[in-house]
Image 1 (tube, rainbow, N blue to C red):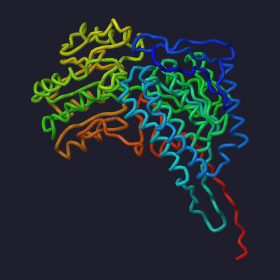
Image 2: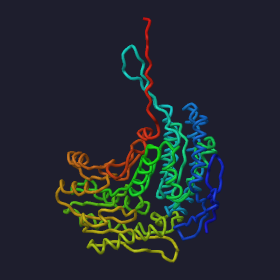
Image 3: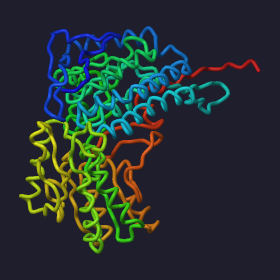
Amino acid sequence: MPAMTFDGRALINGARVAAQSGALFDCISPVDGSTLTQVARCADTDIDLAVRSARSAFDDKRWRGLAPAQRKRVLIRFADLVLAHGDELAATEAWDMGKPVKYARAVDVNSASNCLRWYGEAVDKVYDEIAPTPDTALALITREPVGVVGVIVPWNYPMIMAAWKIAPALAAGNSVVLKPSEKSPLTALRLGDLALEAGIPAGVLNVVPGLGPEAGSPLALHMDVDCIAFTGSTRVGKQIHVMAGQSNIKRAWTELGGKSPNIVFADCPDLDRAVQAAVGSIFFNQGESCNAPSRLFVEASIKDQFLEKALALVPGYAPANPLLPETVMGALVDKVQMETVLRYIDSGKQQGAALIAGGEQVLQSSGGCYVQPTIFDGVRPDMTISREEIFGPVLAVSAFTDAAEVVRQANDSIYGLQAGVWTRDINKAHGVARALRAGTVHVNQYDEDDITVPFGGYKQSGVGRDKSLHAMDKYTETKTTWIRIDSPV
């Protein structure tokens, strides 16, 4: 068992509370199968209490009524507290969802803090507009907070995904009800504590853990929630949109799945960097990333050389205990996800792909959920591992000879989240990037990113964008105030 204690109670109206039913669920660590704590199993009555708390906070303007500069100062204090508690949050993330603690500290903690800080800094620098009208009118175009925002986040990046949603929502003056995944709820609950400590008033940010059908669905269906923001699977995302329509036609924003293609041409300017990016990006976070470049297309003339270099890197991603400082690949989030990944690996073998690395569960004696980094070669477009999101450390490699054909194959997916292109030809880079149906196209890199650019996808990868000022559109209403002017002059 860890030398840490965890508080699994919900946060509603500024207080940590049990579920009204008293129900609990076990929070199981994928590191070793141990029970970290028991977590409040919130349901519809708890969701209603949290929403009513958020509505009261919104109506009395205890947060939205503050000057933007005041909200900025609180959000920056929130960001500072996340950094100050970084070691605790990183260790919690490692225990709770299996992420290597070195990356939880260097990436997740820093990214969550930076997101809160960035939106805090942005809120008093976003101006409203005056429309061009005749002299007989003054038309003001202003943004107002949408109201009560329901947020449902996934288990793979619990802190970052929560920050991407709550930071712009809070900056805009909304009240929030956050439902973390039942697979990794602990850091979201701690963020709620730190928000209160930073000065966010009680009721403005509520955190209600629970199972999807019992807590997530009531939040999406609640008639007094004005907006629902969800990150997770496309299957559940579709249900979110249905529930939004079935209830009060609340705004529904969804960031969903991906099966991102990564295309490496023979004139790639730096083959070693392309190999490192392809391998590192699919195995980072154990492959549990919606934007992971899980489909790798390599021009046939360099494929053997590329794979030789890739295979040489695979031993460096051997799974290990996420709490060890040198670990770069940890545990999958739970046994269900591990078994899902292993089934996909079996399907790849059965459908004729060549397994050239990994493919096995390891460290069984630990009681944890560990799968080797896995590479398949000779993957056809019709294979399951080429079409479905695996959400694990599995790379599907295909060769190509024609640029138009590889773009067609890359776009032959229900998803359109991200893509990569590697070439030294500027015309090819721009042409292929324009042809790819994806929300982000990386050129001669894959994992570079910043809070200043929007994140989201085409097709069934979702609706709306996280990050950047574009995210503010999701959490605000645009109002026109038309004033007639009867000028005496």
